[in-house]
Length: 410
Image (cartoon, rainbow, N blue to C red; front, side, top):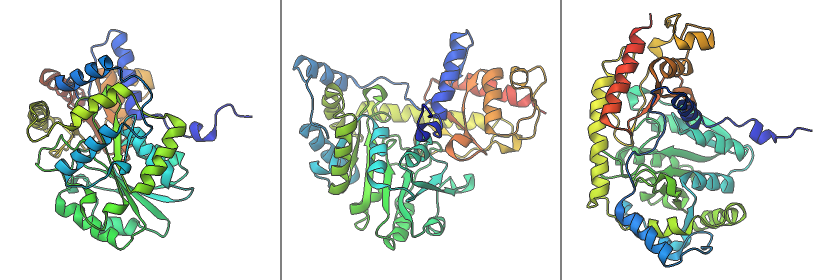
């Protein structure tokens, strides 16, 4: 009898976390590794949010909260949806969870049955496919192109729909590409979905506030989409609150109730102190909050700098991201090239040819001491992902090292 279940044995490890772990181990061994692999803002949580958490401790908010979240927090989330997205939700449509990843997991588990098809535009965030797999659904990938800013077209969406299609999952702004959908682009996709009223949409908006193009656009804004769109968000990225572990959904009541039911059997409510702090985060208007504005502008400055630097790296084909804090350069022109026989990569893996994105990332990690993430993890082996959520000094040095390593190939 097998010790480990098939569902876990067949599930891939998160490649982003795996690359971060290797980089951490090299650092512990004394290597000067610059990690551009993890999706975490290098800012601290705003002071007013931290003060709200301290106050919550002093006021003894230390007992079990309601499973779907404190009523005050759910009301604050409803107000946030109205202020930022012009979406009308009621508290019974909100479920607060331990991070947006749990929110996504619960939505899929609550709605997808075996053999249901879930459309996922590629590149995609690494956990989408694993979550669908755990629900015993079938992922249907739509391959996008760098030339189209990695965005799915209405024709591609229509072609992917079958009688078994139950759901579409996408993110905007996107992890890993940094691209985002405009109002007209979203509406064009919504017009296709208008013809298929039974298809649910999961709109992952966790990078909403890191948007360099202006107003964020939500799929749920279209009247015919509101009652079948689950809007997923949280505080990790836009408020530099990754460790607080707060995510939430705005969803049709039936789906919110199902997620609440599932959460009650898995984790129950999320951390009481983090919830009280998140009330304050929800009250921060992204148009006027200096913390949010400052973080976004620093990311914009880094983005522009890295864009210029990456264009000088041979074989790196880049587009200017419109949001989040990632680049997803196309690097497949480097496949088939050879690294120096004396390189650490060649010695460790007993090969000198770069065949794919994993080879390239491992070569750059071991020989340039820069951690990236292979594009195959996101459904596109032509590319690699790098995060610019670190200092300008480290970013300049990282790209310099990458350039040197690539120039050593022949």
